[in-house]
Image 1 (cartoon, one colour):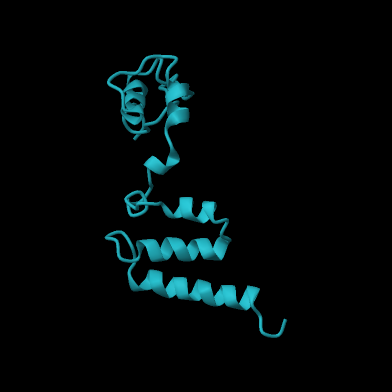
Image 2: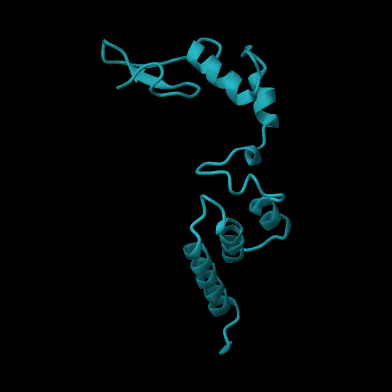
Length: 130
């Protein structure tokens, strides 16, 4: 099913009765998008012209897809990983160890994967035959 309320977000698209696709026009025109934008921006009502300033100030660290296990940390893994210029495998280990005991973590599986990633790191970076 398509139409207002079924495909939310700024600029959503749905088929019109004549077969063409209609774009809503975004918050300045679409009441649904205006409500979504106001809620996302944490304001009581959307006013055209303010969204760009507000969106730029909203940090990606304030939201998380699939849980809140990183957002609830004193320092989010991505902040630690970036600040310390860690590589891919090291970053994966930090994320898995951070979330393993959280409700949305994967417990033992996260720890086993972190161990595997550390084994990969040993093999690739610290070969004994090199």
